Image: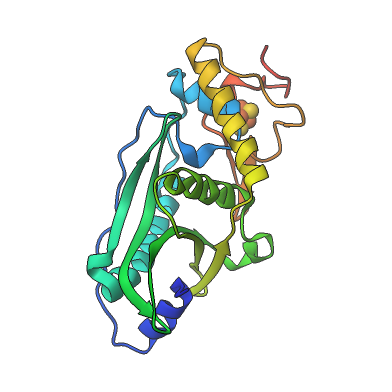
Length: 243
Ligand code: SF4
């Protein structure tokens, strides 16, 4: 399997190239497959239209910067396999929607004289070198496995790859992802649970073990504190759960 790392090494040997502006996906009111396994309350609040805090400008800048580098990685695939590459492919399911960052459709290619055809799904993320020991994120592996599950219902020979672009060192890290059917079952239960709660118009409760000063409710990025956009729907000022 050719991975993003192979293309990155190849690209470094070529002259510099101008890359396009970041892709800007429009927000949707569908359940986001990419959220599966995360905070179920958050997804129910969003789908039921509870107001979220606007994204702070510092986070928006980081997001834009991340999108730029994600496009940069996708351009490696496009430069090498233009006609075989599709971008932001919508994956519509009975539960919700996901967008495949890069899909390579291989048809009639040959490897060691064996005809092969298949699909390579690539999810691109950005990170910084101080987070390296925590990679790959479990949540992103979940996301890719769900994509593999739903895409695999209609296609065979599907491979999955999680790619990180390390912004401060300009490195690419590539992780092949294998399907774990047991974990996929857990994620499908998560999707069911959120779907039922939304149908009942009743947001799910704050999960046991969540704390107001811990991720995913709040966090520190580069020593700058941040919190979930729905924080005020969950926690009082004194740090108690809002009933
Ligand atoms: S504040 Fe915490 S519990 Fe509430 S929606 Fe956000 S992540 Fe979930």
